Length: 146
Image (cartoon, rainbow, N blue to C red; front, top):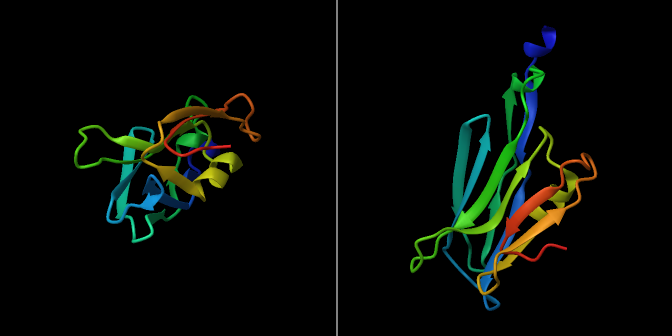
């Protein structure tokens, strides 16, 4: 019973550092949007790329009692995207679902250095999740992830 009263820290997203270019040329003033969803609540923010095509988002965490409920399945949806003026659809720089209230190390590693080129094709990756092997991260990304 006491577990349901406790507030847990839910890591929605670690700090994000990225760079976006077109055929190697940095894209300046591109609006990058981040959308994070947990338990039906959406948290969003955005930023513009600088002259070097770089962008950054602060780490985002919330407090919640939901992880104390044994019926609750903690899933965090992370999306970082942009829309080019001549396109109607968003392009995912990064999109995944994390199945825990803590961000996996592999996620932190990749989000600390997202390097994307809009001339690349979007790819789907399956990243090993050392902390929870039963839940690999399936990531749609414009960047090349190793």
